Length: 385
Image (cartoon, rainbow, N blue to C red):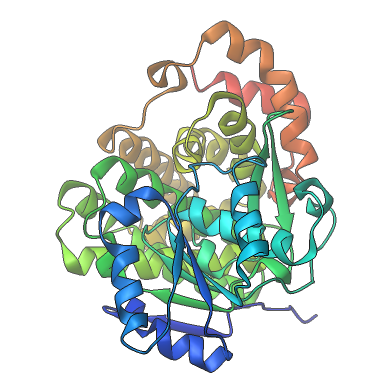
């Protein structure tokens, strides 16, 4: 049986890739881009640098910098209005997952109208919005190479998963030098997010030979380097490995789907405003422990790819080492528990049944090697305390 693989039309990877934005624009036949980003990217000078590169070639690029972490329906409306009013022919999405996800949503709504809820899964969005050139500045979400975006409906606290070719950037400029200024907390959270993407793509029931190759390569890059970049953000070689690993993990899960960690993570983020990578990190050890019986050989492969088990280890030994590593990683990277994050215990417990239903409704748990029911999801949530 064949597997469909969907990728950006253009990918440029390595130091200075972001400075080739003009050549990419020209190849797309575009000359009126809007840079969609956040205020931090403006303060760091990254948005200005892209404007300068484009200005050298006579291209004027406006900046929309009002995206927010964990984008919501309301937060993207100003960007949609800007697109409609500005006669732009393309979008340069600059930043972490939130600006890139925001840009994906804005590109579709700006061209076709409607409301974000109209585009949520199970609808598959194959309409092509404004072409997006994604320039990631974190090594984590992989959003630059995925056909997904996640937008929160703040009226219901639902994280809406939106899927389809229409959300795939046309180009991805993957420049690890843009990650050198990332603080340790964001480095950790996005790094574990990338690791989760790779692991879930590999154990997903929708995995295929192509996604497997990308997921394993990603884990081999992320495993030995995540601690390095957390402790020393200026380690260029480790940053480069993490950036490539993040992109490969994005390719893997975009073509194999994520699973139970993401299904359970989205409701935590929506209800308690926990950053996506951080909620993934909270869940990864417990969900992995629950899921190993469904695919012990696959999880053992993950342990070997990450570098914590050897080929000589049995699957059982490798999986024990994997669980030890995931817990140790959370400890070393100071991943907080929900309580340490400031979540009220009573509120969390009361919301668990609702979060479990939301997780199941997302569809992601059905990709897991061991598919849980709602009560089993509640029991996993309980282990986080």
